[in-house]
Image (spheres, rainbow, N blue to C red):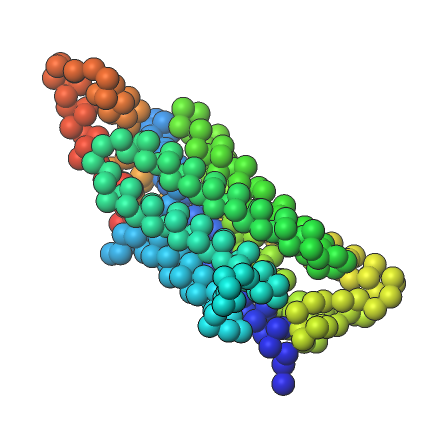
Length: 325
């Protein structure tokens, strides 16, 4: 029978990794499709969103994140026992890691719920709502980085190396989310580059989470290492085994980076062929730069000319990018 700790740790990492990889791939495809399908003369219309509406179910991406956050939070808080606290209100020492993980899922719920609320109230200040969503996404990645760092200081040896690389992926997501929040006035090519790196980093973070989860499957640990303490900890027996295991993790990380790079390049080439430049209508109407500028000026000035009024009218008619499939 497999140790309970190994099962819980493996499943939580693999399921979380699959969720993040799926979101990262969804963003990769849509950012590339949006950018390459725009005509060269309308490249200024590119605005990198924090999330993408899905066909038929507009908020599908955010609903999936809400479901994953609820499942993860409930699992961490109710793991091993339905009582996450003692009778006196204190937290049992063995439950502290579960509470740390629950913080991440709570941040996921805050981001997804806030994004849905802001989208339902998008009649005005659409650009500002997009920036706020990106900042909320950055807060989510910052919370992840914090928890991963805490785990990395608690873990040593091969576990510490696995979580150190997870920190690197989360740091890349955080940096690009912050850049995306302030990239509204930057050229479209730079906005696209930031979005591409953020999406690839998110997908890679999920991939590396799956790698960590697989390491906790009995028989999949590096040679000379085994699961101890009920399957909770991965320990190596001897210095030679530890050096070998760390080297294997380094190689896994390097090959994952190579494979992710090749995959992103292949996806970009496929989307370029599938959606040639000038086919931007598949995403519905995109606001042009003049319309967005008019929308911002309307907050401070009473525009009375016919052209300005028409520009504002066009912006308010625009709904957030919807993919027509």
